[in-house]
Length: 344
Image (cartoon, rainbow, N blue to C red; front, side):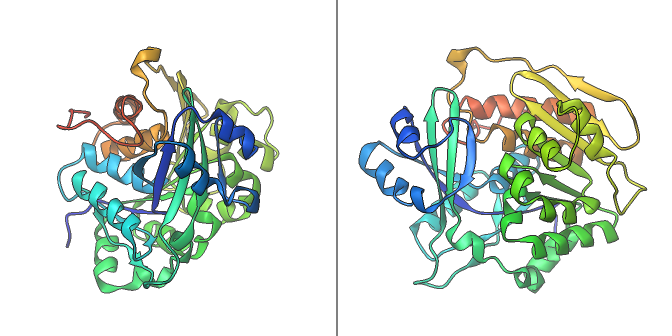
């Protein structure tokens, strides 16, 4: 059996990151702190940023970021990641970034001439980031990839699973396959709400997966969107966290953990075995310490899961999440400091 403990699945993307993007936000009618899938009116944004800005290319995709974060805090050969990429240079850049950070990727690869590797325009304005994603090959992921012997071995050998909410826009079948296997084997399945539009427009997919979920991650905006689509009032993070924690689950022998971050405000944690909500103070960084907030939530989630895999307590997992998120915002893009810092 393999030594890999975390099996992550999502949309592999190469981020095209630009700064001082106020003009681009206005041109494409984007919000300063948001994440959306590309629409027809945004199609030219990728060419636009290439022409108008100096671009920083960063390996992205929410679950891939979280997988690299988990690998950062765990021993070598602990995390494997699956998703679909094209046969192109963008995929090679992703592989190179993963190799640097010790993450094993087992991509499904689209044939040459097929869909290209997905891309995300990351428009930074101050400490805010607006994400516009074109899924490309990521949207072509097939659940049959999970049945390949080499993938199945890694999947069955893992103790924890992680899927980004963005993946639910096209990958419900694969998500349910992984989630149901996790529940049947009494393992731990985690999902990230990822963006407000997931709870708003893909709530039925989210609701299908939720009974199999043991850990839910999100932030204050995603919590408010979830509250809106599920008639939860009031919409504060504590109330939403408790409602999600106590929603129906298939395996009642294992408590569900709901973790909602809120920037520099306290992180909220609710569990299904309690009616109390715990809060954890965030040690805020100074403005000059913040380089880029893109990927901070993914860093938190990856470190949190990594800490649990390493046998740490819930409180220690939150602390690990805070530490790695702070390291992440001190770097350009969802990357981490090397040589590795001790997080656990």
